[in-house]
Image (cartoon, rainbow, N blue to C red; front, side, top):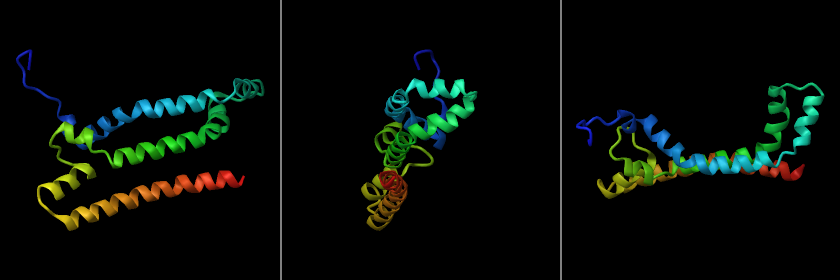
Length: 146
């Protein structure tokens, strides 16, 4: 607007714009968790694998991912639940063609007074988060047994 134009990128009003905005808010948290997991992997393991003739892909698949799997799962769980339950970023972005569940629930309840549909959407969100939580808890129980 300062330069005389009124062009605003239309990606912000699409579903991909919503996903990008939510990822933008979650990247620092995920990066912090993953960097702490990766810094906890001893350099001696990577150096030993290199000395034994392992390539970069083998080191990644056989050492780095298994040693940081737990932290990756925690990060994925938090990011998934954060994006599913996100309200602030999509609400502040403004009217979008596809709405995220949090904003849609606020409109159904606040504007249209559709208590039944809002409750059904909340149960759907709970089932989605429970499904993701199930895999997280199952992996933690499996790891504790070992």
